[in-house]
Image 1: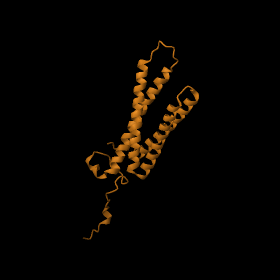
Image 2: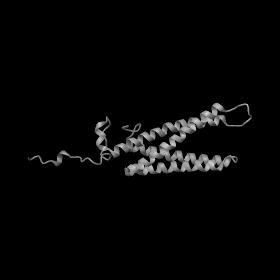
Image 3: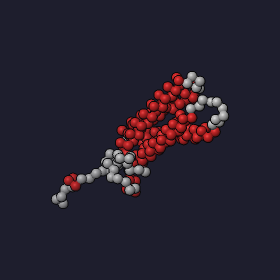
Image 4: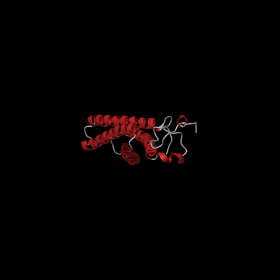
Length: 179
């Protein structure tokens, strides 16, 4: 469990993670659509499935944004499930690119874009790192919202009052000093 996201609190960090998710989903959708129009030999089923995955990722970012704003556990959990599945898919893509680069037979006269594969491999590795950051941040916020009574067990920064929903703050001025 982390106490903050890089240089901001968890709420702001999770909002940044939601915007990151939406932007990555939009960029992937644009890439898939443009690649589908440029490559006429591509399989339409693969493009439709990848486009559906990109739109699901955009939807997950929107769900996260609303869930952080409303502090809903269910929305955070839905985002976590989708993000973990998406990170797993990215991991399998990384393995496929590595296997393809190692087994590519250069004796054939294929015009395969090896440089493009390296670029996509590096981008997917960076994406897995950023997805892991988003998952850890959202998981920490989920635990803060779900179990505010456990905050004293961890060495964390002071938690703002909007995280703690079950504790009541008592101010000194409220007590009668005449007794």
